[in-house]
Length: 265
Image (cartoon, rainbow, N blue to C red; front, side):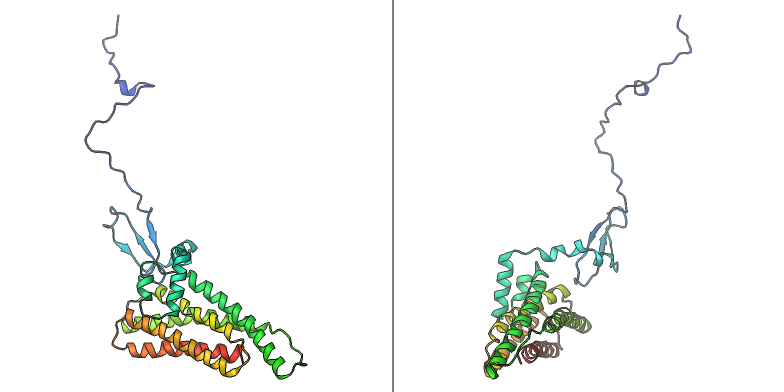
């Protein structure tokens, strides 16, 4: 005879039983971990390293002034996302200064051109400069001994890399002081491509005629200064822009004269 105190267990509590299917109209809310953040780092974007938090943690507000991502290499991969057509188009634009270079790189500024052009220029002016001194020495005295000057590579590397990284940084700080919101990566990109004409002119500077060398140097300085000046004028809106333009053109001319005087004297 069955015990009257026996009570039946729910089916969901029995071993091996399958829980009932939830048939509510709303799906269960998934709680997000506030520590799982989407990190965005635009180097030179003017806002620093930012962290986008989830909407449940502060209404989707951004926390700024966190520069930890600046030391993460993956943060810079977006600035090397260019193909051959992009690079060739930007190289061509640097030879025909029209003032629209910033418009071409606005959506996708790159640092690939800056590093590739600067590195190529270092080796070109060092090697061609040695060749030019050899031709000049043989022109003056065919019996004179000549030796390869390795220090040309050291001087060219220090000069070119310092110029292409520090000069745009200096103008970025100057423009920020005047109230401009131009991004540092755009200035780096523009100044990097402005050095392309120096590669071409350095090849012609091997001609052992000083008048021809100075003519090439002046043309190179004018072209590169026009490229930088026109693009700054079209992209930057400042009342004190004349000072910036004069300084930028002077720096381009100074680089051209330095290359001629040091490597092709």
